Length: 308
Ligand code: ATR
Image 1 (cartoon, rainbow, N blue to C red):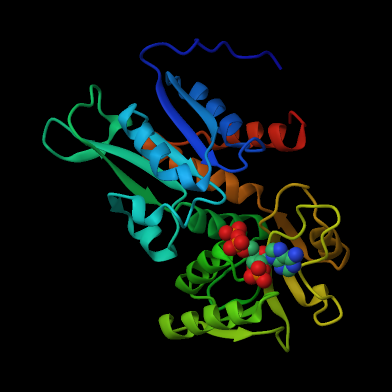
Image 2 (cartoon, rainbow, N blue to C red; image 1 turned 135 degrees about the vertical axis):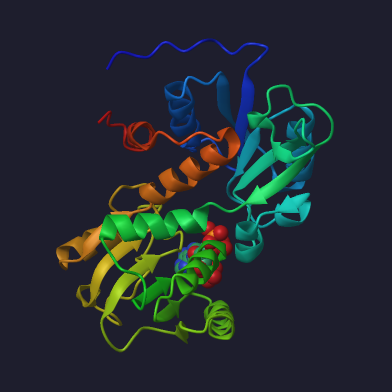
């Protein structure tokens, strides 16, 4: 593939970043820089290692230095919520911020993303969004060809990612959620939250008695080769699910997905979720439609080392 020419950053280059700890593994710079280039924008996206104790200072620095936006990854998403000047409903609902938009007042006095104002001036504020939950639902529906309304779902995990997934799936109208987690108290608390907040979704703790449309892994198990499976295959047979989705995307096929494929399930990993959360963030910052095909190619090449 011929590398596309890219102008060197200049004094006019708009800046974006991802803050995390660790962040060196992040595929977001590759995905976003490919998109920015495709859009012909003189913008650049970098990864910054930021310790949790430095998050507030780093956000303040980015604000003062005129950044257009920031993504937040582990372990910042929940920490950032009280640091935002304004919260979009998505971040307030899921209690986590993965996308920060810096906003300034335009000529009409309306707060708008600084990346969409020609010469931003005056005070700048932060608005926190969560683009993860929507991305998950889109990726699961498309890649597993699943109708989520009224579906029965076995959700593995009860941490931050699982909570956002559970609340978003309940919003989507899934019929029942079974929650399985190493720390059962957390599963019980989340099931109680679903039961209390959703008129249509039943929240249960433990493995379902019957078949399900979807098994969703929202634990971190599968990232490392020595990890056990996030599901006890003696307690619940994978073949009882139509589709299995693993939020883990590295390796491309986790032991859970391999076993699910062998059991005849449709399978998908979390790369699509990563893509769609990034596409939504890019659209918030730039106001331009995200070039999805380019972003997916850049992600696959970065994560799996295969230029496709
Ligand atoms: P995230 O924000 O990515 O969801 P988290 O809130 O730390 O991160 O949640 C991690 C999830 O993976 C939890 O469900 C966690 O189980 P616990 O609630 O019992 O901690 C699960 N998890 C992580 N390591 C695990 C392990 N070795 N065995 C079983 N579950 C594990």
